[in-house]
Amino acid sequence: MSVLIVIPARYASSRFPGKPLVPLRGASGQEKNLVQRAWEAAQGVSGVERAVIATDDSRIRAAAEAFGAEVVMTSETCANGTERVADAFDRLGGGHEIVVNLQGDAPLTPAWFIEDLVAGLAADPVAEVATPVLRCDGQGLSALLEDRHAGRVGGTTAVFGWDRRALYFSKEVIPYTGQSYADDALTPVFHHVGVYAYRPSALAAYPRWEAGPLERLEGLEQLRFLERERPVLCVEVEARGRPFWELNNPEDVPRIEAMLAMLGIA
Image (tube, rainbow, N blue to C red; front, side):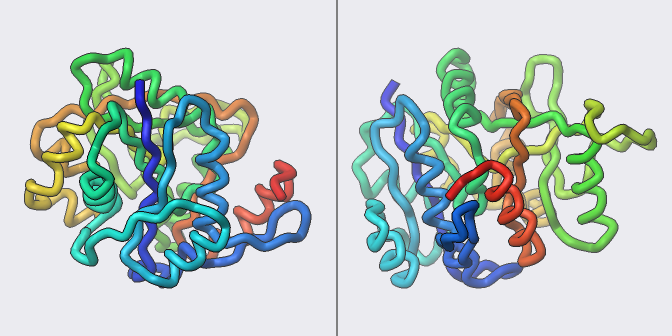
């Protein structure tokens, strides 16, 4: 199937202004900004016809074009990444069967997460939207709980039914579990990976819907689909021993740099 990756990037983040341009030091000691690292992650995904960066900010456009990315300028009124991806797809004239939203704050997203996501959506003719989920081990769950106890809005968790249709997404750690887990033990909590794959019909409909109360409360764009009773397919992906984390807050910078060093990513 024809696949397009769009990396939405906005400068005016409320929690971390200028986040797409924050420098991240890799294993070689070289610094690359966040949006470049997300772009390089996209280049490693097989089966992708085209990848673009979508932004409304001239500073991000200049930085992206400097490292050779294709940039689509979008409206300043886009409220979130999905709206920006929809805008970019429309400006590109459509023409792809699956559109992937690789959010610019997830430079550690492995290629197989996206490949498995696309395969999952392609294999389910009813699903219009899909997103990856990663089962937390004890160490990953502890990191999520540490953020919440410190009052930081960190990673998102997902719960879903037997048919893998999402029931809810939250910035709280759900489902609740009072147990303690060893660092390498599997837990019942799934970390939501901030990547989405859409069929064009769902992507076109999304900006026409008003944000609902749950989306506004949680600040999670995917809840708009659930509030409109549009199913979201959760595709479980495997870490394969690789750490995963998003850059949500300034405190995440050293954590991600340590992971880049451990993985040998320059």
